[in-house]
Amino acid sequence: MSAQLLTGPRWLVVRQHRRALWTVLGLVVAAGAMMVASRVWADSAAEALRAVDCTVSSTERRCFQPARDYTDSVWSARHLIEYAALGMMALPAVVGAFVAGPMIARELETGTYKLAWTQSPSPARWLAAKLTVPMGVVIAGTALLTLLFSWSWSTGPAHDFPTYWYEPTMYASIGVIPTVCAVMGLALGTLVGLLVRRTVLAMSATVLLTGGVLLLLSQMRVHLWPIRTTTGLGEPPAVKISRTWRVEEGMLTPSGERIGPDFCFVGPSSQPPAPCAAERKDVTYFLDYHPASHFWPIQLVEAGIVLAFTAAATYAAFRVLRRHHA
Picture (cartoon, rainbow, N blue to C red):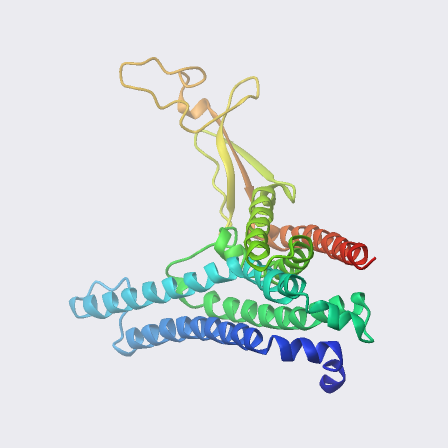
């Protein structure tokens, strides 16, 4: 099957860009090794602490140093996995820049595409081959990194130094979003490469465009699924479920108007505004939040938006190619 897939134009793409593909494979292996090292580091620290029959909360004097060594090791492991998460966030832009510059714009800039178009493959097949190879690498590599990230973080450093699902670096490294966003970067890179046709300029434009789309998605994310609201008298409502995304909180006036949590904090000589003059126990507090159960609905809705955008960019790329060939 693999031999049949890598024939004709696709085999030519592999031969042309084998160094870049090996580089991508090396980066995937390095990122995966970093995630595995983080988990192993955290597990080794936990095993060393158990070996001396101590816990982090132990008050015995003999446990002070082992507990401190454990905390330092897990904190370092946490930083290691955070660096990997930052790389996962940047992956769509890196993929897009690679496709836009070396794979598309360079051939259009140097004119080498003309030779390929005079052979049996049509321009559409030429572009499809250009996309098939990196797409396979991107999907397989990103899916593997996502699984490794979830495994290394779930019971590793997250146990003592939690990072929650709704934080940008964490959200961009788990679920289906890393893979679909990487594919989107590939589609955007293809479109920009065909439009710009200059290697360096296409790479720069792709990074900016992909970063802008990812930023827009991050701003929309909180509104992709209905937010829950809870209210209570006398004190801010407590949401007992762990890993809750607290979106907004504050107080409600008698008319139902929302005011921020710092609205009543005034200087010692100032008169507090209404409704702050009332007893605190008579004030109604509110909290807007996403529980942890909203993770998959938000991810799937966002993935649908990203895939629709990807399909539109891919269609536009083939339209640009057809117009250029005509």
